[in-house]
Image (cartoon, rainbow, N blue to C red; front, side, top):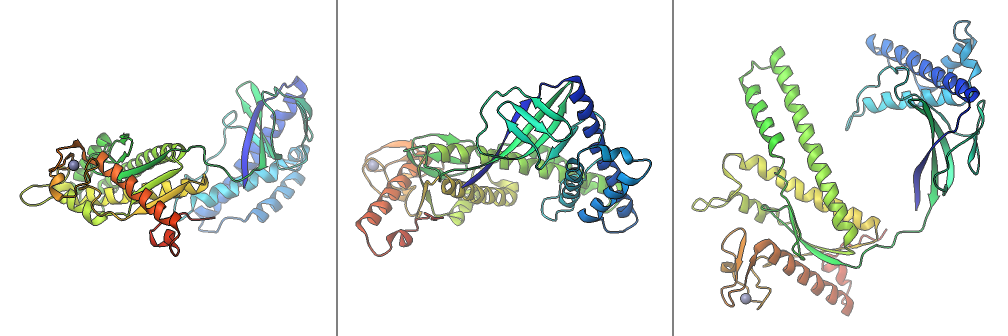
Length: 399
Ligand SMILES: [Zn+2]
């Protein structure tokens, strides 16, 4: 497994280094802005952007021009790197799936940097930067792996280097021996078999009410009018914002659960049952439903699916195991006496066994039953029926 990481250190520069560094960073900024202006011009005139090779050709020309001959005084590598970065930034801005902001002009002193893809040398705590010379740096920790490139950047009065390395390392061994099962739900997004729970997905209330408000405003505007377009973009921004917050939340908790458990048991996604709960019945409406139920339902289902997907691939990374069990009776079985009855769970949140009167939080009971079902599946797999893992739905997606 190959991983990339970067080490950042502060350079111990002398005045002469600084003159050269300022020159390099200035030329890099100049080339970025000049090439960006050219590309913008073309876009404004409905012409396609220049390719990287065409940009590199322009750079050769610029170095010969009387007005810009100073570009030739900088080492040959950083400037093409700048053009590459610009090319990529424009490309990413036109990405169909997740476009980023179109790159802007660089200002002096703001994110000033340039990069060497090669030609540098590192000797303990001194680095050779072509055309700058040997510069000592504060080596706060050892560098592991093979250095691939160096980026020099200015931080106020200081100069930093970021050395990107590649490290070949062994496949990971899962850091935990704990096992758990997860009950996905409405009152809580997830309840673990040890009783830990994670707040529900619809807990971004402030953002959501802001969204509802701006959607109401939108419906009052004349469609496709200037005001409507303005309002529409507000609505879109809020949608993006909510999606980012939810995604961030799902990532945080899936990583926590993944790191702390080598085995995770799930129920096979019971989306149909779940939406039943959201909807409730005529006599006894579900708690979260009412007028927004359609939207809520879609969001919840999407969230559960996404959460499971994250946990599955993160387990795979860390060589953990995911077991999927059938969803039957996990919410109706008494963990104390084993009695199965639908009346054991009469409400959304409360479990009360009608035989032994055991009482507990329903989601917690669900998670404990799911864990037991997971062990049953694993035990059955160890006995060694014909490919029982597949039949039982075990998802150990061997790499
Ligand atoms: Zn019981």
